[in-house]
Length: 370
Image 1 (cartoon, rainbow, N blue to C red):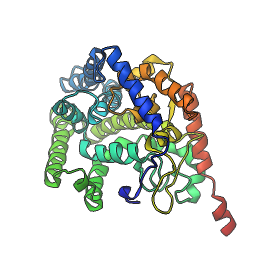
Image 2 (image 1 turned 90 degrees about the vertical axis):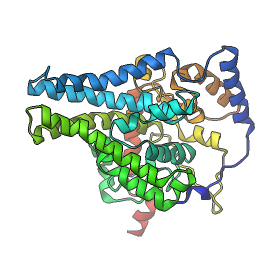
Image 3 (image 1 turned 180 degrees about the vertical axis):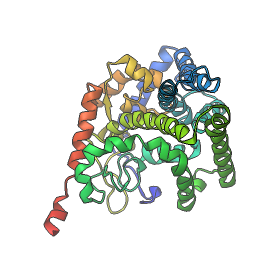
Image 4 (image 1 turned 135 degrees about the vertical axis):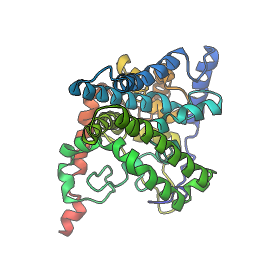
């Protein structure tokens, strides 16, 4: 991976973001609205936790004992895991849930409650992805993953010719792998890369938090069910895997089309590490909205279909994205800058599949060398 500190964004056309920032701030001020969570957001927080824990309680109290019904409840829990990830912990770990840091930190640990690690997520998502979106060898969201090629600058393998077909299966493994392996591997890598130090974090404390919360997760998700319920380990594993498969698939198909979609751009720094555009303009070139007219869809996915607004204003709670989107679009058009949006979610998925297929083709350079 390229060191993130070696990349610098241009200062050209800085007036775009200063103008946009002024207009968005004026919207909140003139309407006397907080940019943080409102009543809708607080209700959603409770709803998403209930979506996860209500089925868990039904299982643990043996209110539901039929095998097929128990399995269905694990699928519902999976939608709860994804909902908490999309709509609750995401805002909190961006500092957008509350103007109080302790509230953001507390709610941000929703991720740990779901079995993952908030610190790792902040480094991977807030720092590497949000700052260096779609930049090869820095943005881990498009980093090489062996069987998936998410960037035209990544190494090509023959198997990639079929990735537009098999990627969908592997998307479901995302949180499963994350919980049992990726958190540990990432913290080790961030330690070696110096990212832990750059975040001014205490390495020992982060390891202690990660291990302790993993043990708590194992306790309530594995140990208690095996002690209380009349099930085999195999039956438990089917439920656990199914829950994470649903969660992983939902999260993947929401996040991937925002940056890996037909028309996506993958800018590279020059030899000295300088990018052509400013950070804000870079976000417009590498980010795409989708299904913005669907209110129920936006509600469940935490406004992440307004990905342009989210990348430009990650410290604004997602319940406000719909309102500020017209400001962002108008300002981008005034400055003759792109504002990418796909009308429907199905269209976004098709655009994602189209780019996966294109990225799966053997690069012309390798064809010439063969």
